[in-house]
Image (cartoon, rainbow, N blue to C red; front, side, top):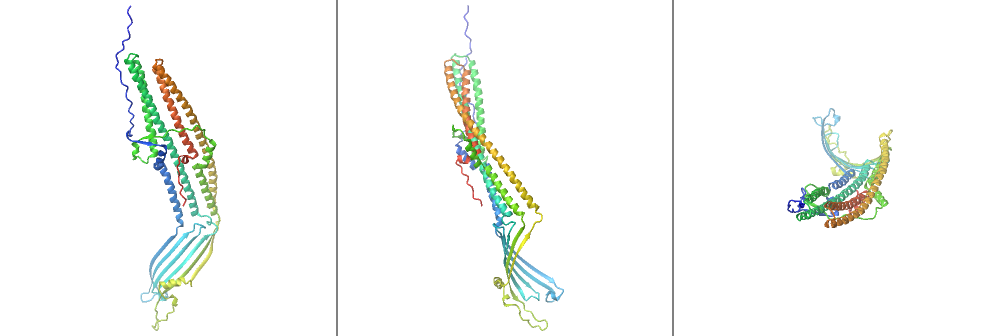
Length: 534
């Protein structure tokens, strides 16, 4: 009887373990690394983020609009120089024409000046005027030529009912002050949103990098297993078929590493978009390396305190309160416009006159006629000013202008519209309060669930480590298989990823809760200065 033969396996040379896959990422230099703490990332976002810059410019724009409205109270200086030369034909000697030409020539140089200003309190206004005239004429009826005439005075108008407590100018200024505060609230809200996005992107990048390292570690375990299998095959301890199983697992884990590398790029680009100013920044080609590790606090969230902070801090509620203030200003203004207009008007003016006497002759005798011009009217412009300030000639006017609207439908309709808007704002406030309540409750619940997930994931990872250690000891003594060893390694890798995901999700949930309660700025030690309202 013939002895059975041993199977004749082909001689296979031991192969070295394949190298790690190429993990180079497009557009990222391997020798350019930028390390970032979370605080540094937030600081860069505040300095460079375009959304924050737009919100910051909105505040500046609101300030310029307010200054433009306030400019209505700036004094206005008006200068009106004018030269007039009038030559008229006269058909009668009573027209004053002299000589054979039969024409009357009058040349006027007018230089009127005024300063006017509206009062920011009381709604009144004044106009200070100083008018000057130099006239020369050939009229034979004029005893003085050239003649200087000046008037100096002030006109004052004061509303007594409509527009006294508020007018359209003061309404626009008060409303714009509130809108400036609204733009400040919007800036805070936008800053909080961006910081929250930076926090989430930072922890996503932390997870992506750690996940990549976990996948690489898992791949290295497979490469080491392949090296041991090759050695066993060469020693004839196992069949070459074992190599195929290890290489299959190696290819799968290489794919996992490449996918993890892709997620690193995605997370990194999202963070770069938040912290870089433009596409020309050299940091786009840098590898971002976060240095902070996820924090964890086993203490449950206090929902009542979170709701209290949200009601006190949310910029959306502040904005709605400012909208109600704007509506109150409109109500005051439109109610004022339904009243009759009663304006006090007063004018005080003084005049001065002087000139050079004209020498006239008696048409019958040819002898000069006596000068009948008073001495105080003889002289130049200086004499005119002396007569002006002597107050011997003056004009005092005081009166009341009354306008009673018989059907003031425009003001009544505007007042009714403002009251409707008040009701809408009250409903919008209740709606916003409900939305904040839901958002805070959901954010607090997300933190609590993430906290429990961390505890569960830690326990799962610790048990997976113990199971792998046991499986490795069994494999070394030949009581386990490659398949079971790979299963334990994959289970540990998944457990580590689940723990890291739970930790980063916990920190992201904290960021969302800070946003929901508007404590993001305080927690991150960020002070937003509020400019004094002009």
